[in-house]
Length: 460
Image (cartoon, rainbow, N blue to C red; front, side, top):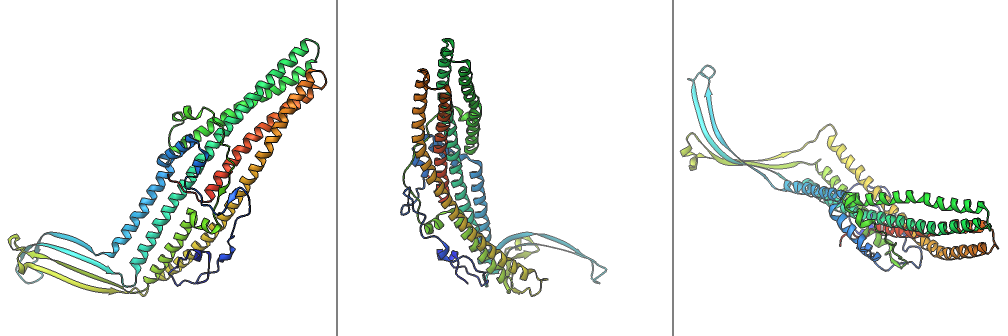
């Protein structure tokens, strides 16, 4: 068997199938791109959302873990996989059955030449049927079901990681919209003051009516932006309600009060690429799928060999119930057997070929999962790093925008500057502050997606 990424975990695939080439070990990056925001020697915290120090977010995630319908579905699927494993394990043991009854029979007097007669007897017996797993068919199928159960566990972990990330992203989007609403309300209040100033100057003959109309157009344009933001707030409250498994009116009062976005710009421990492979549930699930398919392939090959069974029974039979338990009424049977299906229209052979193709596809899927994992982490790191740079630059832009508005308004009051400068400063400041809120929200969402890409844990 040729070397592949799967060997990175030192997991042997016990089959004789010849596999095609897959990516070698050295295709994995040894380190992530250098950036001061990341520390590659540190592990990722299992409760990554705690770094934001937001008790509301902590509560939402805790409720979602318990009540989310997708999480409950994943638990049920995991339980079904466990029971399928137990069912397959049960085939190691003999089947025992208990039977008994009364038999009454009348013989014909015309076919045997004997007088017509009646016969009846009571019987009770324990029967056994046991397939002896000589070539490992039952064992390998049980192993395949065990690996499928482990796959369901990893899928459950992936569901929980995705759920926590979705809750955090919806929560930060909600807080971002609330901050944007505050920006609009604050700027509309400032713009209303400018409208009042232009009206006073117009009434005293120091300004034209054009100044008043322009000031009002900026003011009402800002007011017109508020309803869409308020609709976004309601939308994300509803999304959070679905994620945590409650109706929106149960959490609306808790989430309607605005809270600032966490100001989180710290070094993040991301781990080494090889450790990433051992952490992400989708990669562990793909690894388990390879093991399951390998076991299924071995079982299909064992089906081509003879099967050995042991059948038997022990019991009692008598005409009268009072004689049923006597020693002379005992009956028993022991019947070892061997069956070998040497022709089945190609069914067993094609089943083996199918299992071989399924194993090859599982390995292909594993390689694709690894490549996707590396891409997702690299993309998330780049997005988070650049969003932080954007937020830092916008802080200075906002400071200068506020200074510009202040100075242009002072000059306009003194008649030393046209009103157009004030209008431009108002529009720019509103745009800068909105961009700042969006950049902070986006950086937090990028950080959540990075933790999700790194396979962060889900439990407390």
